[in-house]
Length: 179
Image (cartoon, rainbow, N blue to C red):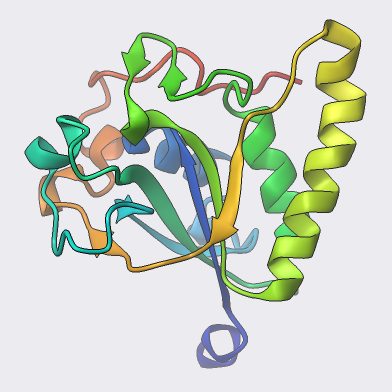
């Protein structure tokens, strides 16, 4: 396992409530099945750089401009970044600005936070492909923000793996496979 960790990469996605985003990635890529995801954490990123260590209550006001996001450590020899980006698009509605289902606000925006120039190129390419194949035919436009990853703040402990600890907890209805 230490070799996998040495070669691991990080992917960061925001697609609405971070409980559901983390849950669906782990449902289809469970670490125990060695499908490429090694571990996840939910937290806050992409906000006002002057706001340090934001908490859930403050982020939910919209005042910090942080997104609820999931950070994924993955083994690129098992699952590629491009596959994760496409899966990200499959599991939410990237055509709604600052909203997923009934959840509205900047913290629920659709965003890809890239960790290298290569990731940025892959994210742009996959976005173009997904737009042409799945959204242009329906007259919809992807509004996902693609930007370099900034400072990351882990969410409070009770948010980590929330839907695994609370199986009957709230899950946004858009967090499902759309194709």
